[in-house]
Image 1 (tube, one colour):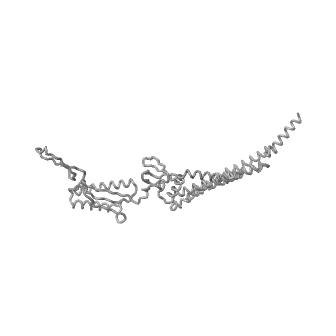
Image 2 (cartoon, rainbow, N blue to C red):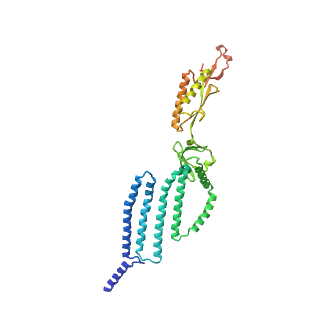
Image 3 (cartoon, one colour):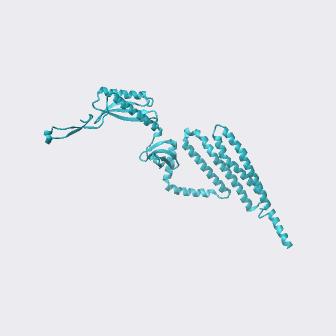
Length: 382
């Protein structure tokens, strides 16, 4: 009985000191204590150091330092976990496969933290590149940011695979063969991708622009993607258009207008005298020249002329441009012009023509020989 107790005691002491394959209970407790110490340091770092940088960033007028602190705070705090895990594993006396696994775990955590740091830094980097939007546009900057992020992710995954002894060269070669097979059946995908790049480089339109794609759709651009572009019609229905459609169809960008046009034909009665027509024409022209909402020549043409003899009217051509391109303001100014023209015509003693028909009736006694004769006229019904 005494020998059994001594054997159990020796087993417990051995388990406490050496454990299984170098993992002793005492070492495990020491390692846990070391890890907890660095966890405490992580909390202190987050509270005082990161908090101090955050307060300093808030005092500055620029926004990029605020974004930098917020983006890098979590990766920096994660490095305390990495360091704590490294020193905790140094407590154990490991050998063989166990030592190799722990070493790979440390390399993995360090690599993961490093690439996380780089990935988080891309957001403030993208914000700083907005100064180049005049040359590159915001869409190209967004694309570059996306490419950089995916590049960091791909490099990080390749690094982690290499750490664990997984060769990426055969994987890349396999993807290459797979890519050739896919490319043969995905020509439209590459056409859309190249068309999307062309849209951004040529700056045919940008997010927020009102565009018309002939025979396809009209609406506001919401997103320009690698393969397709999303527009929202004026009935608020979203429409996804493949990018190659913009290469095959004419695209009108209404948001790029410098001015809005008004093109009318104003029909006056045939009984209007020449003096009356010229007087009305001159007053309309003068009203446009005096109104600052309309563009004066020679910057843009402004035409008011007696134009043609229509079936029921003598037409005055009005061709002018407004300064504003905002649709609501344009409608208001067009309304003001319409009211002004109506007042000018009525004050001058003229009248607007409308389609009419005159009927001539023979005397009653000749009813059997009655032949109706109708023709269009600008006069009132008689």
